[in-house]
Length: 492
Image (cartoon, rainbow, N blue to C red; front, side, top):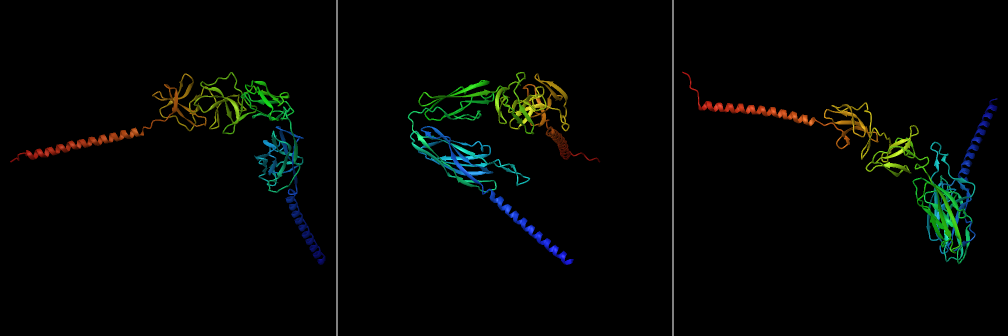
């Protein structure tokens, strides 16, 4: 019985050892497979173009594509080469598939364009390094990495050849590299024409404003929207043919509501024409849509239009300022760093607030309790519990003619009021009725005066004592001399 038990135990140990060895082998194989899976990924780069030929003086756009993107976070440098004698560089643009993820670096020299990119949005999870908070870009389908536009030179002939000279390195965030190969290149025959009939645009855009739909040379109508503060937009229009003429109208003095910008293109032949339009709407509201302001304490305010019914403080004039990245309507005054904004805090009714761009503070504007100084905005505030009224002052009010001050007065009619500035710092301010100004009140320090008075009294007493002593001394000396000069007769 013991022999059978012993044999069973030995068999169990052998099986357990075999299972452990199997698990170890599987772990190693899994690790090797995982580490080589990315390296086994294959990416084919290619150059593509929709054009079948290229005419002298025309712009041709080429796409550099990848047939897939298996979690790539960095690639390049990709070197694209072309004949500099046949074409000249015009522009570079990112592919829409990757423009939100990758930051591109592009350099160009005669006949060569070099492009590198890095995905700066990818972020690993802090709690689990094996997971992502922001995933790397992945696609099983063809992706356009970037586009390059070249203009055919007027004297060009033959073919324009453009190809990938070098693929660079494609790798993930762990530094593992994919297998990258060169795919198709493009060779376009250059057509020689005496007079061009091409009146299309190669590029059309508004500076800082998106147009809808995306530009296409064969689409002639577009729309766009600008804030009320915008009265002029910069239009960039590039003709496909270098000899075509472009006339842009109505992009200045935009009116509130709908405006129509016209772009007329006339081909080299003088007869062929294309008319492009951008229907641009200038908003009625000065406040940008959903624009907010966050103060130093993290409170969020929404920008609103300033109603015509509100009263603006004296000396403040309407102007446009860029605040928190938005161009908004404000009221400003020379010498005052803070500006007035009309805001909604999400709870109270919309109102004027003072915003200090340096301190990032937002202070409600209370006409009855607000003092506007050249250097700061002061608000009459309740006296904090830990602050004492200066000696000799009693509660009182003072009518300045503009507002009624609440504060304290002494026997010399000096009036002070406790106020806080935009940063929340409070202090007593002395009102000067002659100039209407305010200055920080500091009680006079009479310690030196008392000390001088005490010292004067001490020195006076000492002087009196010394004078008396001197008089007594003089008297005694004179008496002694007199006694010696006139001795008294001795009695017999």
